[in-house]
Image 1 (cartoon, one colour):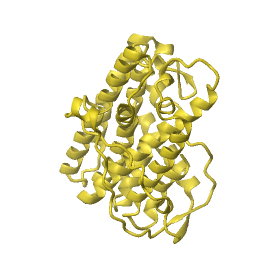
Image 2 (cartoon, rainbow, N blue to C red; image 1 turned 90 degrees about the vertical axis):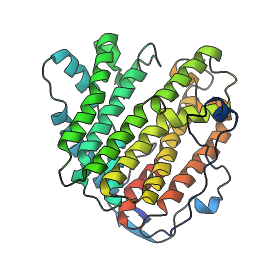
Image 3 (cartoon, rainbow, N blue to C red; image 1 turned 120 degrees about the vertical axis):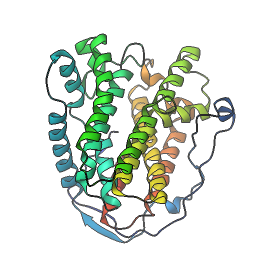
Image 4 (cartoon, one colour; image 1 turned 120 degrees about the horizontal axis):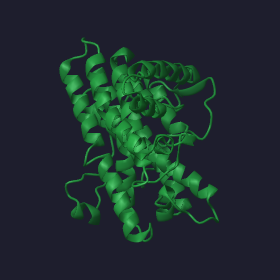
Length: 347
């Protein structure tokens, strides 16, 4: 998830937003009948504009320091978690992707959610690192020639471009279980075991056949079938939600679970994360469409949201997704909500 503007050193955010009743998510119609086993939702495009901004009560929060210090600590933890060892070739490929310069959105969202509900960040750090490993593994596989066939990732050659397709497949395969191993073996013992088990189940569901894999599968099949033309809006939403919304949703939920969130808080974090994940992808689609205006579009970005809805509708959708995410955050109080607002306001 990329931000379109740098974060200033001090930003005002709400400290005690009022509690609001969560809106109801809209089920799909024709697509849900075809795939009833895969649950999804569409954004509520009728949210009034008055709900798009938090209440006027504010606090000053050093957001720049929060992000930069967390990124540095996460990078240090990842360096230790994925050491260079035998067989060196596989671990070099693993480290190439995991240690690449990135905004570390999934781990930061996990830690922020844990702190929001009263947990200590040390309880979330192993899971945060695991989420980055899982996220990196999914990107390695997404970039493969048989998938999205992307030669670039995070501003440099993708894993298979450097190490070859065979090694990239193995690196991704190794990172998935390493994430689980790291989380289970390094989470502090004072964290209740049932919370850790719930996090394991959440991550497994996210990366599985009804989560991110489902989105990738349908993306591939539709691209093969019609070259990205005549896309169904419900299906376009489903693909974005599964391929990109799932990871953010999982990150927020895992942090909440580790911090001891109530069921209501977990569901708020789930809806918040899902909205933010799709939000960033729609913004990226818009930026890519602007960059490729007047050019023939090919590759992964051929199948994007702007092609389905048009640029103006995509802009409206971005605002509505921001409204949805902020609506869910309005159920929380205190300075701990500030970092999660930053994911919305700097999309």
